[in-house]
Image (cartoon, rainbow, N blue to C red):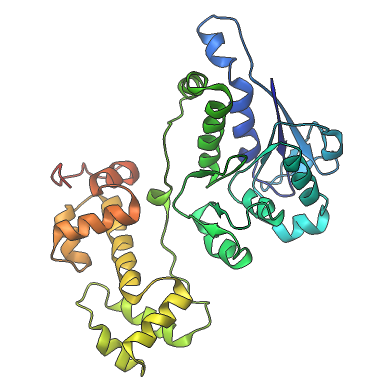
Length: 335
């Protein structure tokens, strides 16, 4: 059996420990049990903390690990659960970083769940590579680890022996992927079926909420943001907006990119798509009506933009996120 060590740092989210643990533990067991065939477990899974003492989870629940990291002499896979409070973790347990790095250099695979990628990035093993994590922590990650390329839309990434995943449920996607990588497609499919999990999700774009931060330190860009938000459904004259800000359009676009990572046009597109998402969730208008309401006349163009930024067609998005009391989507099937 492959040995799996789930590393539980301070104030982790319990699901990022027990979700992957259950998937690895049940691989070769649960399917066999329900089909009345001999059990053939594939993984031996333990939870380790820095010192072997109980870990307080983010919900203030105490989790008792099986051992300390010093008791782990060999492991095939380390799974790092969420590590949002990275500064506090490094202050309390600086030994975690060299321990992860040492086992990787001895041949172990290392995977991170959600913000566990902060701890993985501290090792330097991701330098020059790409990473993903929950979309809500993307800006913080970019600032802290500029040497790691963030692929924010990815559900999970595989760098051979290094892996990272997005939010909580993406950790389950990655765990299933690793079952397939270590044990084959059949074992992964059986695990997915018995645990009622979807396979093949590759993007977290449908779940992302576009943030429009204003703490970037450029007051002129903040003024432009405010103006665009107030006039987002109107035809925008960017030359006029630049003149009102007393700068050239080229300078305005450069400062937008520096502060927000997008041009004013890209910012406006995200504003409009975010508004369209909210209206689709309400479920009372067709996509054509929504298109006009957010500021577009070209319905096919806005449909393509919506798909590009969310990864879903409008009707797919609405079916997934409409409230229980929402009306049935009344747009055409093509939408």
